[in-house]
Image 1 (cartoon, one colour):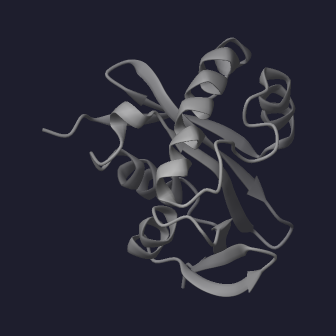
Image 2 (image 1 turned 135 degrees about the horizontal axis):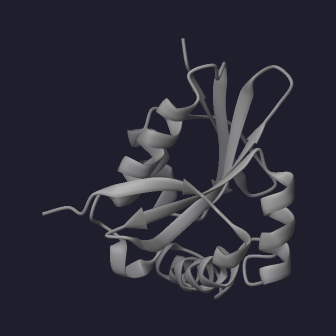
Length: 153
């Protein structure tokens, strides 16, 4: 049975655990088309996670059974469009619907959003179907990235 999840704002004391999970999660991208083991800029740095905690509109942790299992960043633009990025989930939680439930909760968390945007590397065979299942559509491919948008109206 799928585990219940919560979204909780990240705190300074969570950053080391979040970084460790982020590294494990992004390293699995090599199984989904990544040319080598790695991740987005700063994915493996506690200091980067700290900067994102300060700069993002919200840095949310995904919690299952009282344990942090992932996280993501939410940024807000002046026109109330939101951008979600650096989405990561511990590999032990993959393919259990937790990422989908976390995204659905996050989307519902901001009813004022005029649109949602994100991007992902074009080579990633896991993330495109994930975003499309959630109603995101590719609106542009540029510099090896697929740019997605999900209108709210």
